[in-house]
Amino acid sequence: MNASTTLIVIMAVLFAAGVYAMMERSLTRVLIGFLLLGNATNLLLLIVMGAPGIAPFFGSGDASEMSDPLPQALTLTAIVITFAVSAFLLALIYRSWQLGEADTVEDDETDIAVRERGAEEDDVMDDEEFGDDNNDLATDFVGTDTSPFTVLHARDFAGIDDDAPVDTPDQPTPNGGER
Image 1 (cartoon, helix red, strand yellow):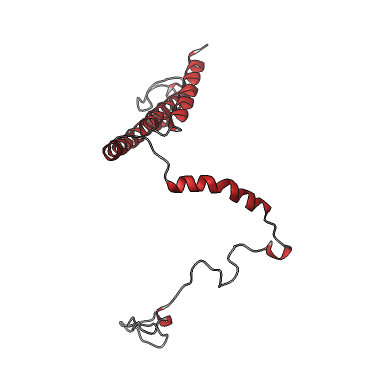
Image 2 (cartoon, one colour):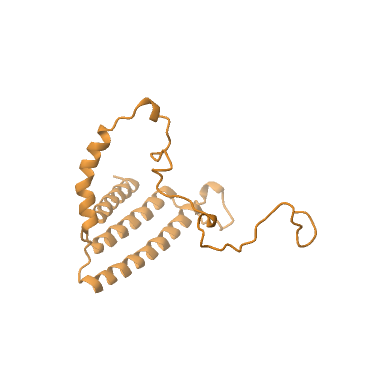
């Protein structure tokens, strides 16, 4: 096994372990998984960089001997982003620990209702059949009676006195020019 193959295997293991850790309910494990993913991404960028060479700003030498500065810049950016998101996750974990003495995310009533409702609604949605006249509709809300919202104007309410200026084409502009 050469060096690049070893780095690729290590990178794949870091990605797999990071994704596995992020699937847990514990926020601490999510943080560890995110840090593993960040390190795997940095390793990926270093692998993509290729063979090391002379610094690009050195000025002497052939262009083929210089290293590519883009993966180095992307690696620095990935380090900064990983640090910032890790600090945010640490703040969330600390606040969760203060409020509930635990860092696990529990199911609430909505999660349970959605989980129970999911299979039933999937069966109902699969059983629906539309006629030929409804195939060209772009929305489920066909008429104004079934529309989810109605746009109202101030003139629709008798008790509201609207003193806003109204633009009419025959009014002159304040500076005497054209509109």
